[in-house]
Image (tube, rainbow, N blue to C red; front, side, top):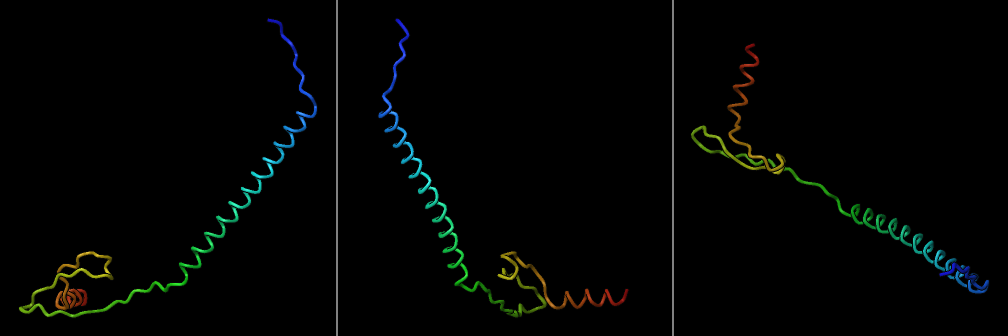
Length: 101
């Protein structure tokens, strides 16, 4: 088989080049629109999050377990941890022992 050099007519080359330029312009416009939409969506989310006031109320409730016992409770201010067996008598004893030292 002989190696023949095929030439493409200039009008066909210009047509392919023009088609490629249009495709590149469309891709650039698509990228610009995508970046603008990304910024817009982030701005909308930030605006929506700032509409609400995220505050929590802390309520203190005193329980009397009777007979000098202690209470177990799960409090929101403790991030769901179980607060087991703290009462005022324990705190008073710790303060008295600290003062004696």
